[in-house]
Length: 108
Image 1 (tube, one colour):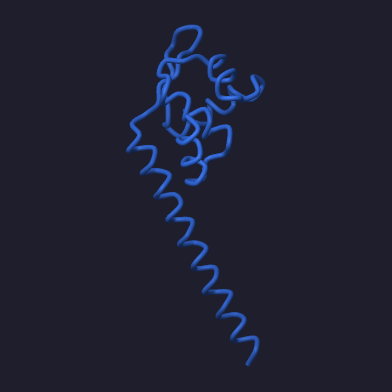
Image 2 (cartoon, one colour):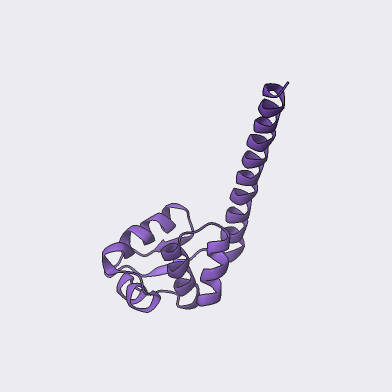
């Protein structure tokens, strides 16, 4: 779980999202309580973390009680995060180029 969480953080997920996803990948069909206790996520935060991951389509939950969580396809997760980071890099690059153009024009 630890290594998955480290890599997911490098791809832009928060610490809690990374820990939750890592635990779910290694322990399919786990409950929020199990995730909270074993991934070291406060129980008061675990549902918001899981809801957020579910909104990103990184995991699915069943309709039963308690809900059980299963991770989506790892290729989808990594592909999504990689594309998001590439897009973010392109935005930063454009902003840097624009800032440079402004600085050059102001110095003339």
